[in-house]
Image (cartoon, rainbow over all chains, first blue to last red; front, side, top):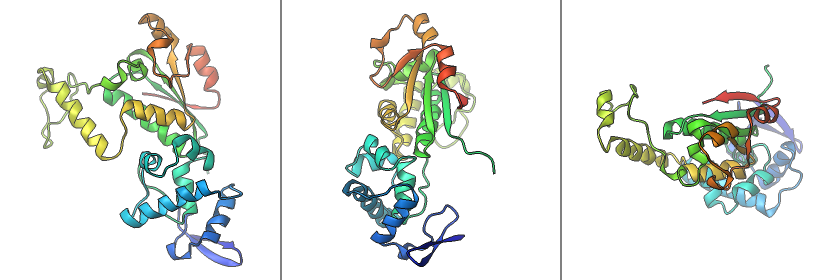
Length: 105
Length: 161
């Protein structure tokens, strides 16, 4: 377990480096988390993915597979990878304040 | 801490369903982790990217001593040769894969390609089987020699499946 300082607040992280407490999440925090991941500005398209991830997590208690993400978020594979380089499912989950996705697909 | 893996080159040499999927899952998994991925199809593995064959790959039931029947009992190997067994095993496996959201071969290759994975066919096999560029699905980037495969694999971990 580690912590980071964001905007003067101490935030707890889990072993994967994702938020330990879902309650800490806010849209402002998401913008800061995105910057840490190298995404300077969250566009509407980023938010579409983040909001979809949060919705699935709320309903199923887990992250969607990349296939589900591609089919249901309204953002296709190519764009997903350009929005979240180095792993759309992993990065968008982190920015959305969710645990690391567990599935293989 | 050991250096993280940055690039993988995966060789797919078998054309059965269970021979093709491990490579596809590893390539897609690599891209999801931000790892560069190259798929190189060779010998019967080429069936996975041949347009007319890729939707009809099947489970090899003959000579597979690990084969189990529904319920978990070991399947006598001679049973695998009975007509309809291959189709049945294939149907079962596809059904189970769909349940855990593993896409069919064609859709999986599209996903990997859209994710930035490169897809190559082995020139020696293409020549041996008298194939040409037009026999392949549109995601196939290029027919390359083994030398070119090594060039493209510079800095990569090579995984043979």
